Structure formats: C-alpha cells, structure tokens
Length: 490
Image (cartoon, rainbow, N blue to C red):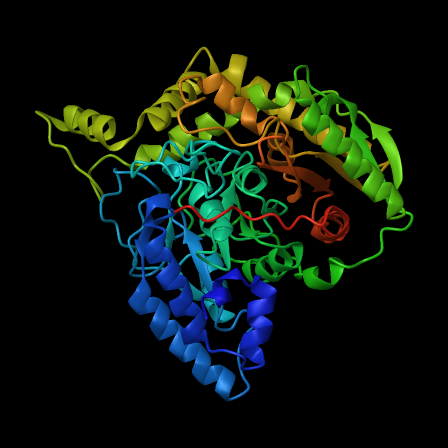
C-alpha cells in the first residue's frame, strides 16, 4: 500500500478513522519512503522505533473509537523544535548531541492530538537562510527539477527539510518556523501550502530561538485544509511563553470553504518590483481574476514603507540573534573547543561551532547593538517596523486581506545564488513585512513557471484573522486546481 504516502493529511486522518488502513501501515509506508529518499537529505534524525510505537498506541485508541484530530497520522518535525529524548541540533554543530529532557509546547500539542513522529527535519543552521544550503549537515535537495535538467534544486529555507519531505511524500505534513518567510518561501518553491500564523498564536516554548520578536511556528502541508488541521492542533495559549496570546483557537477547517462574496482584497502597489519576472506578474493578475470571480472586490492599497522592510529586518533579526546565540559558549552544553584561557575557549568554540552565515549575522547583530551604532541602526529599524505595522493598519480600513506573490522567482539551483548574500536575502522581500507586523500569511501553490517549477501566491491577513487567510487560500486553491507533483527521480 505504498500509495498511502500520497494521501493528504485530511484524507489519511479520515481513512484511519474509518479503519481503511492502520496507523502502523501508513507509518511504515512513510518510513520505507524515507529510506529510499535519503539522497534528498531531508531528515537529520529518523525515529522509526518511536514512530511505530506511537502508531501502535494510535491504533489501539482508534480501535476503541477514541483519538484526537490527528490520531495515527505520521508527520515530520523541523529540527528547531525540542522533542523529549530526541537529538535536537537546529542544523548546527555547536549543539553537538544535545538531547532535550523536555518537549516544545507545539509538539506536545501535536502528540496530544495523536500525531506520529517520523523524525527531525533538516534546516538552515539556526533557521538562518532561504535555501537550506546553510545546514551544518549538508544541503537539502528539492524533489523538483527543471524541465530537461538534473541540476539539484534548493527547496527554499529555512524550513527546507520540511518542504522537501512533504513534497516528496516522506511525511503527511511537517512543522516549520517562519522568521522572515521560512515557511511560506519553501512552500512556494515546492508546490505546497505554508502558513505563518499571527505572532503569539503558537507557543515558542521549546523552539530554539533565532529572533524572538519575529519567530513563529506553523505547518507546511499538501493542501489548505491540511494546513488548517495542523494549525488548529499547534495553536493555543501557553503560560510558558510570555508572548503567547490568550485567545480561543477558531475552527480553521470550516473557514477553508467560506464564501468570499463581498470580501475586499487589497493589491499593494509597492510589491511590483523592478526586474520582477513576467511570470510572477502574470500569476498575480491571474490570482486577482480568480478572486474577482469568487465574488471579491479588488482594491488598490499602498504600503509606503515596504521598501524599508528588508533593511529593517536584516538589522532587527541579527540583533536578536546575536543576543539569543550568546548562550552557545561551550560552557553548559554542546560543543566545547578548549583554548588557552576562558576567552580563547569561547572564541574557538563559537568559531568552529557556528557556520559562516550564522557568524555573519551574529557580527551584524553585535555591530548594530554596539555603543555608537545602536541609535543609528537598531532604534531606527524599530521605528521603521512601527511604520510598517501602521501601513497595514491603514490598509485594513480599505480591505480584509492582501494578495501578493510569495517569492520574486521560482526555486534556483544549489550554488547558483549562495555566493551573493544580498541576492539571497532578496528571496524574503515579499514575506518579511508580515513578520515585522506580526500578521498571518499563507502561501498557496498556483502555477508552474516555464521551467516546470512551482510558483506561489501569498495572502496576508489581519492579526488573529487566520480564518480569512484560509478562506481566500481555499478559494485560490480551488481556482488554480494545482495538482502538479515532482516526478520521482531519487
């Protein structure tokens, strides 16, 4: 029954509930697929024994007519989420063989709802990257390829292992985190759905921190309904996280089929960039037409501070990273490289433990927080961030959600952009604004480009209005009818 891996999450949950197959069967099918796809390097740690044990427990519950919303469904976990007793290294060497004795709140909620863990997924080191070329454990390869080419393609980042695994049917769904686009961009690159919820909707407890005021957990899935199902399990107030919002979790799944009649969709003029590929503009226009056909009113809006979003992000995020990553010093856990004295031990440990991109961002962050530059850079970036949030508040007076492209291009080949950090950072140009303003954003696969690679459309909603994101996303999904899959070559 190898076709079990091709099911969507909601199809699998329904099949399990109706006893069409067992959790052990669908879990084993995924474990077999993982074994055959190790060349994609999507998983850092496979947990087959744990998976089968969890599957058997789910089968016992289902037999009694019990079980949660995800009972028996095998999923993958980004290696930024701490799982009790399972090695967690955040794609970095500096954590060594760190095995947390505690569970992240998001994964605890997923296990409570009956999900089965297949393993920990590869990622850019400490979630810093847009291509998954920054992992200390090697590139993740996308299952997608250009027409007539066998060039290895990036799956996007930082949740590249999550995107590659879901796209290659190595798990039904996966967790990701999004600091500047790290769920939505890889989802767009691999023909998947990815949602970054409102900041505070999902607890950050037990997630290795990159930039604490921007990081937010969310799912990468095959369909909009699957994303709603996953997010409902992942969300909820957590007293262990001071930024967690004390709000009830809405019925996200029902929102996916809600009518859009009378809804106003804003089109921000600042998202039309010089040199943007014609295919992206064409897809955007197609998306506008689909939503108009669904009964939406299309309105032009302006987000005047958009052009400052990327520079502001690349000051705020590294500043918070330099502070968060100061704890990795070789003293308490992880790698330790002894030096002649305390300072040289710190220096050697951090120089050998951190990769190039992480070192680059720590240096930028330390610089902008240093005396003499704090006001010139960090404080100014925070002021810009406030203006960006204000732009969105003004836009919401005219519209209910925004429609934009997710990325400025389709996926690129491994090594094609990595020598140019600025070009790499531009991958996040359409996604970072939602992080800076703490808003929900969802990416929907909508078309293939001339090379046969996926392109995505993004919906940005008001704070705590993921339901509108799911409603508009569901309408786009139905209109696009995107069913393309990567042809199996691995």
